[in-house]
Length: 403
Ligand code: PHB
Image (tube, rainbow, N blue to C red; front, side, top):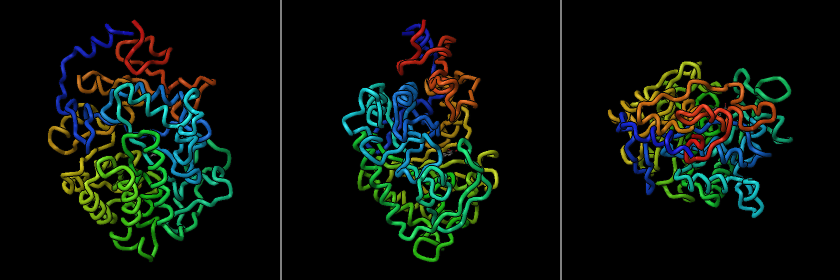
């Protein structure tokens, strides 16, 4: 292993001390404020996490906290053919058959822990944007029979487009799916769970006034539109304890044709106040990004930040290390969630706190797609600092094995 290269990086002075500082999160301590974002990579095996994923996550164990890619609470809620799930013993990795093939989350989580990392499972249901071809004969569910506009199904046969969902009769049954998934996540050894309440998926569909036109206790007022999220959160708290539960929110809307903006802000403020009362570990808020949030309306994330003190505040959205340092220094966030930088730079956390640039190249063509049968390309072959060889060979989580 690369003592010289890795050590040369570690020997550089810390120039972003606020980003480098540990963070107490419930009973956990994050070793720095660089959090790895949930990133869809579409590389599971029939819904189960696998050894390729293990390698990829272990490489990124120097981040203060890894948020797993969106992980399905039920096979019904699927859009990507190879998104992982956490809804049975096989996908959890507790069926006793998994360890040699690293199938299921447990072996992945164990490996991240061994490499000194912490990992939360992001619990995901696609709701109305689930792909109809992937869920057998079960129709896509949503709060109301209102379909998303446009279409973005990208790697499946058939026309891109969305289906009109059936309106869920009893939302509490869907909230229970998150509870069951949290039980599996606990069995897999995850350090905590994040409710995916952002980006136009099921929880967000209940919050947003365009996708939710219900007239029962789950629709209408801010209290009613926040109800589904809070029911799910309360299940997660029951399973993990409040200090190990987070939520992701995207109040600016846009992605998956969410409205967001001023019209939905009262739902977010009610929801965040309730989350603060419960003392959950953190809320992660995606700020307005011109591409990702297009069609939405910018909300100043500071409005929500001001509502929490016990609960930590994570900001997400195209941050550089320098900007992240400023935000943490100024108290605008307790930690920053990085997607693109951690995607192409496995040792990004170690670099960011030292002001060392991330890798330049991102293999966007392999973001969701395995190239030429080589599952590492554009996935676990991004170079560690200072090593061109890393382009060719996979890594251990300790750092670059070359040199
Ligand atoms: C996606 O698969 O495009 C995706 C998934 C989860 C997100 C955002 C985007 O939160």
